[in-house]
Length: 84
Image (tube, rainbow, N blue to C red):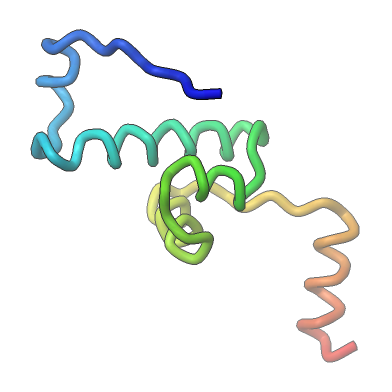
């Protein structure tokens, strides 16, 4: 399924990003918002943004968006950090 957004020209003109970069910028912002609200996983959000997972991690970090961890994932990360 493909979704096409119809964004008025005056709204696009208000986005402070050079023309050729606007689509990438907007897709990254949409993906970041969906990730921040826990509606997409990091991998799916990166896919939507059209960038790699490491690049998406860097982007959300720069925006102050926290990564989501389930209790099991957090326990595994902490055990790894403690050398278990």
